[in-house]
Length: 208
View 1: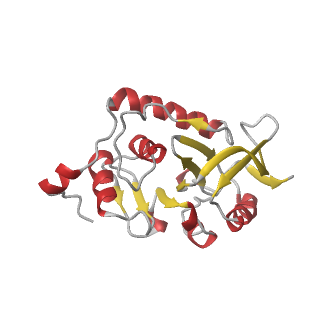
View 2: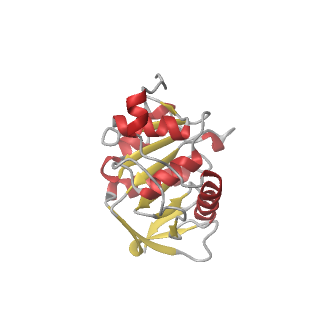
């Protein structure tokens, strides 16, 4: 796909970080904290002056600006695959936009689209290089520290209970079944507003 943007499109682009270096470092540290402490809700900093397309929540915009570069491949789900978002990702992140989820390092989607049929198309890595797996970035309706699902595993002292609004029961059932494939499997970041919570492949999900 061509990464060429015309001058009219450039003039319409939403801005990004007000201070790219400082803001990017802050967000990166928060993302690392989220991945190392699964199930702990994190509020991303540096969002007050952040510009982003209307289709993109602030936390996801900040995450994309921090995680993507010219060497990463991004897939946009049908509900988010809009010209303004494509242009913003190309210009501010330099990311390669791919046509199929199987090709992606990062897959951006809304909660309603996060079905097992889609998630199982993402690269889970393999036994030789499990770190090559994809990460799903999912926009949800809300995140709370109360819910029916228990999260356990590395980075969690005992357990966390979480409520992720807008995510289907089918997704959780699929995720539980995938736990047997560890160390292969995808990582997931849920985002709502300026909040994120990470679900690495090492985390066990159960009811209780």
